[in-house]
Image 1 (cartoon, rainbow, N blue to C red):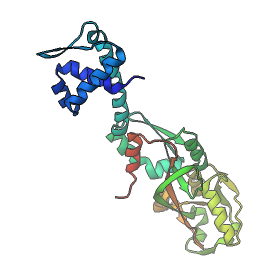
Image 2 (cartoon, helix red, strand yellow; image 1 turned 30 degrees about the horizontal axis):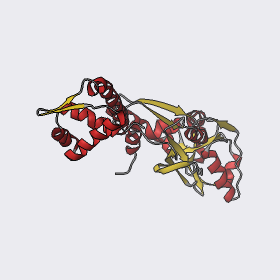
Image 3 (tube, rainbow, N blue to C red; image 1 turned 30 degrees about the vertical axis):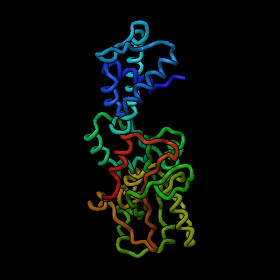
Image 4 (spheres, rainbow, N blue to C red; image 1 turned 180 degrees about the vertical axis):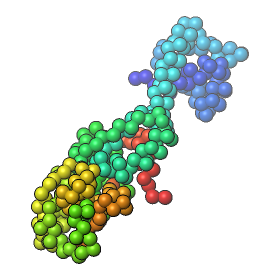
Length: 295
């Protein structure tokens, strides 16, 4: 079996031309260097050096024959180690980020821009889909970090805390002005045309679970795939939507939409970071995640 350390000692002695200088460079004792050379010569069955009063010269029939090959092999190993070290200390390569369109737009867009300015060499691959699908991508190794709507229970992923909170509310456009300021019990919403996010989402699942706990079943007249469409339909007066307050702030401020005074209020949800349990994180991914740590 090849002992790389013996060859590294051989190479260092050949460069330095002295056992003493080689020992200093390798941070080991001179006897240890001498013993390593003797061990390698014994394994190869040939003398590698000529011992002279000037120091250690490569032998023509031994050391000179293998020096170039040993030098090349050690350089290749050093390059390999440097590449691994670079992955741990330099932001490069690709960071694959999974999230819903709304989380990308409303929660992490600013961080993406800051990260891109700081690490322009890193390619950001954005994988947009529902949180359950994103979790699947993470588990299959097709995604490095996921930003998901909480709660999601999955023992095969590692959750790293909440980075943002979401308050679901009911909103409507000017067509429903008569409801402004009016106290509305949750069950009375059943009499209104409701617009809800589609069923295969965390938001819809949590809404249904909560309303059922208070004995109310809400059935949508319209289901949509994203919040932007819901906002447009509500502004046009097509119904009352249930969506995060954080995702319709501009419309509420401009007066295009208003918040209904519904009781009881819906529980606050969260957006969290999820990572694969088995995947080792690159330096680039660690740096991106660190942007969301609370200071």
